Image (tube, helix red, strand yellow):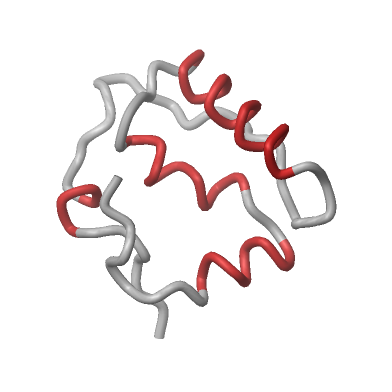
Length: 80
């Protein structure tokens, strides 16, 4: 059964009123990870997400092998 890899503290963070998740470029571990992370952060900042809120959004930018890697992480290991 899937459990979120981030802590309850991050799960309890609320997005800004009127927030709509942006459309993220998908990463599947075949491209450049650094470029993906930079693009992910820029996309989030443009949508007024910042700090620990990015943790909650990151899984939306993954697919294929990268998504599998993320879902295989131990529960509640990410706190920032």
